[in-house]
Length: 168
Image (cartoon, rainbow, N blue to C red; front, side, top):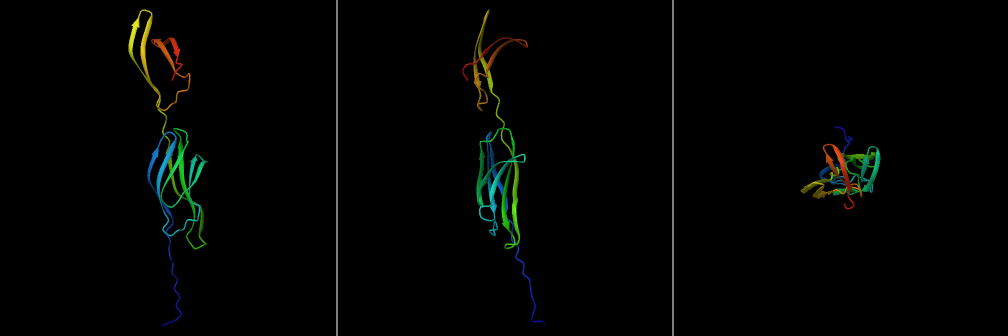
């Protein structure tokens, strides 16, 4: 029996992970709930960040924390595809296994498109040289520009008269 036996003990650490829980989209906002798990406290201080990209261009960067966290990006352009990345630096091997800018999560999200305005015409009264009617106009996403509304009178496909709206 030998008395100088050496044993190597390996302690494996769990790399940090990110789980997306919920998300909400509007025309100008992306809001995402994450659970960020770092059971071995490997993420280096202040390196955990959420990034928003459109194509290869970074739009915004936010510092976040481990655990349950919400990340909201607002002031965005409607109907645009964005990528959200959660990145961090962490060390799996006590100073000799540093991994920098590691992507822990990546997902694509598209902001909602703006709705088109709509109008309905009611109470139409036709006289020999006059047409009267009521117009109900809906622009819930405020996409119409001032002076951008025209009311046209048509015979078949030909506009014979028009009126520019002064009030939105």
